Image (cartoon, rainbow, N blue to C red):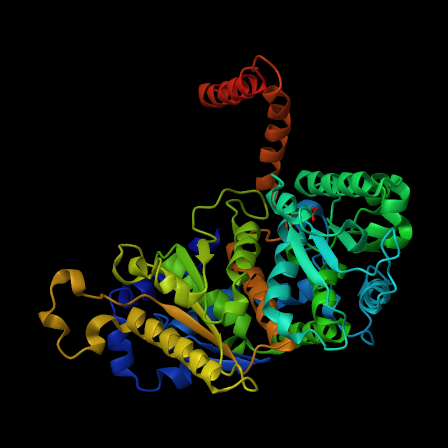
Length: 545
Ligand SMILES: O=P(O)(O)OC[C@H]1O[C@](O)(CO)[C@@H](O)[C@@H]1O
């Protein structure tokens, strides 16, 4: 029986028929305690679901569905290292990466905790050497610029976190600029290489597989630049200017990273779940080793909550199940992530990969084709900027969109009243937008008299996520909450959130097309691809003549 034919799903369908037509204005009018009923706090985070189109019955039925799908057992399977990633026959143990060192974790009889912490300690040693100026470039210069070369999970997590937490850089740490290079076309790197000094630049090549063409293309260009500008042999350059972070040490060694400059993690860490591992080295360089550990501790707090709290009070479970309600019962297939804090500007891009690469699936774990929706289209932007861009569609477009508003309650506590006032301005806008999206122009007394083009229909559901202040710990907890939400949804949908076969074929087809740009003919593809290749060939010929 597929999940959408199951009793719990059918009960939710019947319930949705009653709730679907109900407006959030009615729900708030009927129950003055919605906020108290539907907001929850744990592990630094407050999640207010009261602007979701739910009732107490909805939540109960969603929990019934979670229990029917054996969610508690599946959560335990995740934490205890069962092979939850069936298509790749391995566990997904990102939670182990943030487990304290004194808590052993036996997977198939082996305590993996020791090697996790040994790997983190090696990273911390390298970070200290760079911070202290002990790591030197080829002419003896201390490092001033660190460039993280990676893509997807080997880029988005470190980039997001460095930007979010840059203010936590401890004062005693030397001033080091951290850059991120991901774009396959060399755009990021080309600009950067014109204004950094090779002798004081260190490249971190981050790649779980150490075979991602985007990353290797950038790493090759960087290495050539260093060899050309220094006039020194490759081996010497690799010793002083490259660190490799990978789960494929042989490939990193083949590329030329010496063993002492390698940091390792494991195939059971999914790329998009890897910022807690040594892939987070750029983060530790930015905020210091201690703060990096604080971030792990915050994530661990959320893990503990997720593993132990009953479903009815469990933040990631509720977030996930309310998402299921929106997607599968209210037919909402777009999800906007809207942080009201500029430091969180890269959170939407990070969640795009986390959610859509994990749950953008259409077959079950057993390989059967699904006939129900899974991951929605997720995008986002810093909220106040998005207000001047796409909120028009949220308020008056034809699409239903669910939104996550994210904001700290406090900011700039030690930086003066003007900035504090700016934060309050942002918060007022955050709450105004979620209120208006929920209640529409019923918030006005005379809305009925307005012309149609000025009306706001409301009834767009949203969750508001708040924490006291943005800190390494609260940020760690926030990201872990989203990770667990994704897992819970995958359990309900019976899909594998830990593989990404859908990105493989594009890589193969690109490889087979690559040679054709330099050839005079193109081998049979389709008329569009052939025509476009001919256009590039022609431009190249004209440019050469
Ligand atoms: O770390 P790697 O192996 O270079 O992979 C980078 C990214 O590429 C993907 O495999 C998708 O192509 C992502 O899942 C991953 O985060």
